[in-house]
Length: 250
Image 1 (cartoon, rainbow, N blue to C red):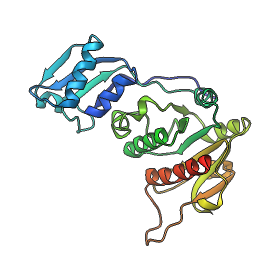
Image 2 (image 1 turned 90 degrees about the vertical axis):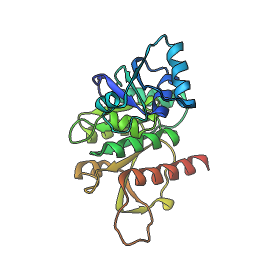
Image 3 (image 1 turned 45 degrees about the horizontal axis):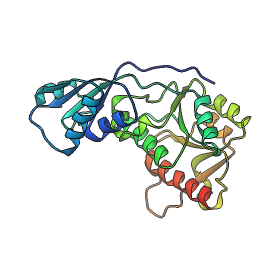
């Protein structure tokens, strides 16, 4: 599988995102708040900072704009300890501790950080045990991803692997089946998506790579009636994920 690795120090931007970071127990090193701003969420952030013994730096908007990586700081930026990549084993252990069949997202070359963040958010809401991304030709855990996840990155383990197809082979030995999102697949309502499953989502535009598609046990598609030929990757991931949730709850 893979070893753990860490990102450089990460900025968390946005009021909800900073609150979720505090609530999840993430270590915040420094926090910057727009001077003169007052509302309920900022008061919550100030209280959490006080409980953590953390000084709040009040700065002007120009300073926040200079610090911001996402361009949407909402008057607050926290500098946090780095997000750590999990290992694949961590994800499997999470399922075991919950006494649930593993449910994992595998992302084959997602390059848009907003898509990755949205998928991590979906993974949290759908009760998935983790997300696996490839090391190359894909976006990693950036500040924009953290922002787009709306705080879910604090709760969903993300593993980065050298070879996604090989990881799928290893997970097959652990009892997982893989459903690859593909327009030529079987309609999702006609697929058995229960049990230990990996939902495989391809890259924006190009879809699943040949090797990864070959490792999938079957292909699954969302029935559509419009004129364009595909959905956004994160939207497709959300629809398929909640069909898995529906079947697991049935």
